Length: 277
Image (cartoon, rainbow, N blue to C red):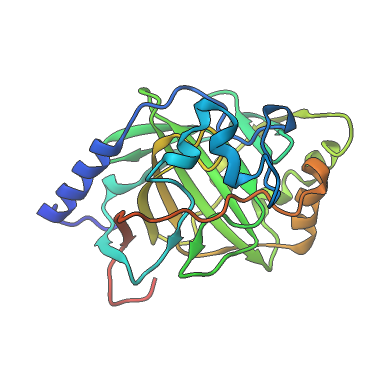
């Protein structure tokens, strides 16, 4: 990423991030099994439109003003030149476990899998999971899959890095675990993967959207820093079907509907504007 001078506008934007930050209690950032009492079925009494009524701890799902996911529009985004301290990645291989959580497949790193750094704060990689279809939209368009890499700071603030996927070439990261995912279609709900290198999830571009939002599942806690890569990755139809086969009830989707922007700022970071990346 390219360094640039700090501008008053960028300093003001960072100040807003600090104001909206709120500590999040340590929770499993993946998606719950049926027992926790919610689903993604439209019209269901436990569907997304009712999450905020199911438990008092989930009230933010209904009343939260800065909820996720959202539509990321270039038209409404402020463009900024990326600096090293906007998003710095330092991942490394570590032992991991794959879990079938009912509504999603998650990979949880057991040791130190590295971190990202945002404006001087370290956020440590805890787990990743997939959504079918994408939760975020880019310029009004939905995609076939979305991967979330969930990070926690020492103060339990949360930062999520997201990648969207469309049907195309196979995903190298997912291909490495095809056989393990198949094992989860049986009675096994958890498999030790050995050492998994998160760097296999290669960043396709240095352009990314940044905004303040929330967890996309109950309790829908706010104060989450989102960094969504602008360039869309690819996954094969077979890999997509495999995820559908494993999740609870062969679910075709586990994506929360879009939430209102409510006047939030969206920043689109890039190395330099006026040139294609």
